[in-house]
Image (cartoon, rainbow, N blue to C red):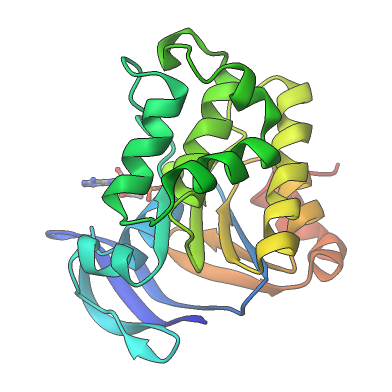
Amino acid sequence: MLKVKNLNSGYGKLHVLYDVSLECEKGEIISVIGPNGAGKTTLLNSIFGIANIYSGSITIDGKETTRLPAYVISRMGVAYVLQMLNVFAQLTVEENLRISAAYSKVKDINKATEKIYEIFPILRERKKQLVGTLSGGERQMLAISIGLIRNPKILLLDEPTAGLMPLYVKMIANKIKEIRDMRGISIILVEQNVQKALELANKVYVLVSGQIIFKGSPSELKEKHEIMKLYLGVGE
Ligand SMILES: Nc1ncnc2c1ncn2[C@@H]1O[C@H](COP(=O)(O)OP(=O)(O)O)[C@@H](O)[C@H]1O
Ligand SMILES: [Mg+2]
C-alpha cells in the first residue's frame, strides 16, 4: 500500500529525515514514535507532498508519488489529519464535515455524514454546534472525521491524542482501531503516547534525530529496554 524508501527530506536547507524507510500494508496501523523534534511530522509532511524530498522514493499502491503536489496525493486517497488547525472553528460540526466531503467529490454527502455519525455519535449530538465551542476531544474526533469522510485508503494522523483527557485518549484510541478494522484503511499514526501507540500498532517505528532506530512489533519493542528508557522515557 504505502512504501517509503531511503527517504531524505526536510525544508530547504534543513535536512530532517535521513534514509527513512517504512512500509504500511492495507488495514494496518503503523505507529511512529520518538522524541520531540525527531522528524515525525516531517515524515507525514513528506508523504503528503509538503516537505522537500532530496532523495529516496514514496509509492502508494505501486505508483510513485515522490514530489507530487499535495492535492494530487490527496486525490490518490491520502487524508492527512494535522496536529493543529485541523478544523474550522467558526463553522458548525456538520458544515466542517460537508465541506470536506464536497471538496473531495464524495457523491452522497448525506450518506457520508451519516456514516461518520455512526462512528462518532457525539458528533451527531453536536452537529449544529460551532466547532469553537467543542471540547478538545470532540474537536479531535471531528478532525479525524474530516479526513475519514473523504474515504481515504491511507490516513495520516499526527498526535491525535496529544493534550487530551484520559477519557478521550481511550475513546479516540478505540475509534482508530475500529476505523482500521471496519474500513481496512492503512493508518500511519504519529504518537507521543507510547503506551497507546504500542497498544494500537501492528508495527512500530522509532524515529530519533531523523533516523529510524527501531522497526518491529510492539512486543519486540517492549523488550528493548534501552530504547524504551533512553528515547521514549518509559521504564526505570
Ligand atoms: N514547516 C517547517 N519548516 C521548517 N522547519 C520545520 C518545519 N516543521 C518542522 N521543522 C523542523 O524540522 C525538525 C523536525 O520537526 P518535526 O518533524 O516537527 O518533529 P516532531 O514531529 O518529531 O516533533 C525540527 O528541527 C523543526 O524545527
Ligand atoms: Mg510533530
